[in-house]
Amino acid sequence: MSTVFVSLPSSDLERSKAFYAALGCEINSAFTDENAACIVWSDELCFMVLTREFFGTFTDKTLIDPRHQTQMSIGFSRDSRDDVDAIVEKGLAAGGSEPKPAQDNGFMYARDLDDPDGNSLGFMHMDDTVPGPGSAA
Image (cartoon, rainbow, N blue to C red; front, side, top):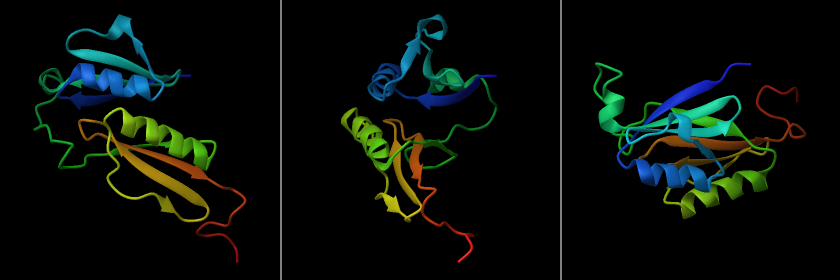
């Protein structure tokens, strides 16, 4: 099994560390310094939260401001609607924001959460007992 590392820019590294810790993540101190924090989501996924200045050293492209522009959204499945609500509420309490209302499509319940820098996370529960799009009528 390999580990996926997703790099995210941050304007305030300490605030980002506190936000992701509030979501239940751990900080891997072996890969954390004044420019970067390794946020362990699971054995297979880590966020490398980097200061904007340090993030810029990895690319020649212009960095967007994720509070005003979207590059991508990272989606996570949860075991229940309650799990979706619980993690979003933790994120809101830790300084995140919810850019739009919850979406309830019957077969899927989803909420979006922006971290304090505007990086987008999506949380969803798929109910396989409810027919979804493309299901036979």
